[in-house]
Length: 493
Image (cartoon, rainbow, N blue to C red; front, side, top):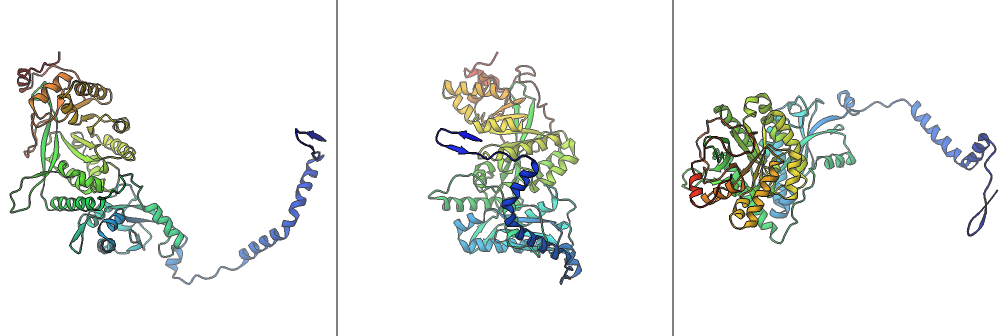
């Protein structure tokens, strides 16, 4: 049989007459491999027939060698940053101090051990083969791991007149017996324990100085909060057309001065960017959540909001106690609005925020996206989280009073948000002129110092239904509306 190509004439052998002939032809080139195949099979037969050697370890250890067990890992996420900003000696001191605190935390629990895998990673396991820390389940939000985080990461590490906070990442992991792990298994645990990489800005020329300044601020803020100098103040979100209608009152954290000093309280918002750059907002938001829940229990008719950073909006062990309380107290959850601040968030936070908001919605809470800026990232978050309330950042009202373009931007932002959430709040209404501009643009819910600043008095009034339609009229006029009209700001029809 011949085939013709454009270049040559090639002989192609005819196919074998039968399947048997084909298999015989195929087997000829493989005959040279038969000696090696037979030798391998012989080795396998001899190994299977050989008697098992007695294990030299105690019976209790021998039974666990072929078993995997669930352990808790602790990873120091910012150890390389501490090394770069404070030096290798400080990083080593941080690793030793974290290990010491871990040993002290698990020391009272019989059978629990701490294994150092690397300077930045530790393993907590139980000799009994059960979950460590006397835990009953390896859930993504575990109260025992929450207590571990507070005990180990809550206090700053001090070394040679320097102080810094360790950013810990904890979780559960299934490993072989930790007493017998080899190098490859240890590397696998280290790879699984480290958190997902962040995509923050690249280190600049003055990165080291800014990191140390941010850390100094973070240490002072956390120490003030742990010393009981964190005060909650309440700022209302008001219906501009009905003076008695309050959507809810936002809980604004203020830090009181140290005893013996007469400094003014510091609003957390002024120092929050420092903590967000370091990703050290977790414990502060957890403490604020506990205060808000206590306030809701003391005021059974009031609606309040908890303002958290986007870095904290993720389902992990920091929120174990709070979510358990919300699940057990639906009458509290129904009156809680969780405001997630989008400022400073990153693209990879969107998925974690979505899961976090869905879990809150299941508990009965309402969701608000704070500092909405109508950017592509903010729109993606709105689409993923499906909030009940959108709060426009204060720059919208500022620009609206400066130019026609800014006013049109405010109107278009209100129209856009009306299609994405039941309620839209205009922030930054700090002057009578701001109130007039917001009314002309068609806003209903507003917040700002002109309408009411943060006050320390605990709110007691019942909130208005957050799902009220976005229409004007009804319920009387806000008292300051006449002042806005007197300044020449027309009201909407």
